[in-house]
Amino acid sequence: MSTIRNTTTLDATSKAIIEQLQLDGRRSYAEIGKAVGLSEAAVRQRVQKLTEAGVMQIVAVTDPMRLGFNRQAMLGIRVSGDTRVVADRLTELPEVTYVVLSAGSFDILAEIVCADDDALIELLNQRIRELDGVAATETFLYLQLKKQKYDWGTR
Amino acid sequence: MSTIRNTTTLDATSKAIIEQLQLDGRRSYAEIGKAVGLSEAAVRQRVQKLTEAGVMQIVAVTDPMRLGFNRQAMLGIRVSGDTRVVADRLTELPEVTYVVLSAGSFDILAEIVCADDDALIELLNQRIRELDGVAATETFLYLQLKKQKYDWGTR
DNA sequence: AGTGAAACGACCGTAGA
DNA sequence: TCTACGGTCGTTTCACT
Image 1 (spheres, each protein chain N blue to C red):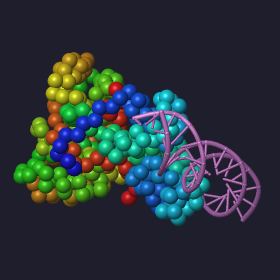
Image 2: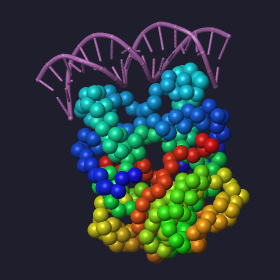
Image 3: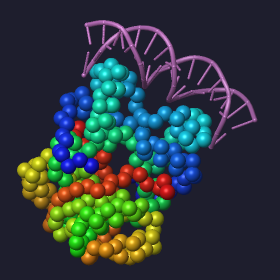
Image 4: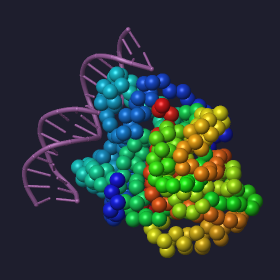
């Protein structure tokens, strides 16, 4: 991952293309072209550039709740020592879906997804609180997800 | 959104198909078929079913940082009154990318994305803390994103 | 649920403005 | 950076298992 800030500014056409692909990532380039007023080849070139530049990627996103993962939580973690080392250990756990180094009363925020309460308790007690450098954790159990956006910059 | 829990169990083949599409949402069904040992038509049928069931969707995901949105934060919000009403108001704000009702010392967790510090301050002070029912907010500014998974259930 | 085959449409490379 | 076009490959439909 680069530390250099690499910002792209998008014109209205690229924004429109991204919008189309946010609705359906498999929509054909020809169809998108009709919607945004461009030829199939031009759409294809733009999509390729946006993807190569890391601005956008087209991927499958799954719904944990529909797959039997019924407990989700955000953890606020206070760390003694190097937060990056703890973050790397968390990243290795498959139940951890999101790790961010943060400034504020927590050093790390981590989102976890588990099948049920037992799995959540095991994960928290045996595999997260046991990690070297984890000084304290606070758990924010998810009750209901109201909004989740994967899309940014198209405004 | 349904309140009925609607869980699907996936066989190894569907998991393998999802894994392929998590790497590249535009990979052809024929290629996926080769990888998972199924005909093109069978892969397509499964993808269609998974999509219709809401287990999976194929979409474009963009990177805020690459688009000039340089400040991200998680907000912990304490609410007086109905948390759902406040959550709905937050959901309407375009800078809010994630809203979840939570149990713990916060009633709502909300992720926000802004261009810069000025935009962040304006959003927080003028449009979030001003909302009816927002009793207190705590801001966890993102320093570095270490992991972000869109994929679940493929283990 | 799966395969196979034929018609159709999408995708890709290249040439040219 | 775009359009135009031809070859190739993917997708769709359907009959069958």
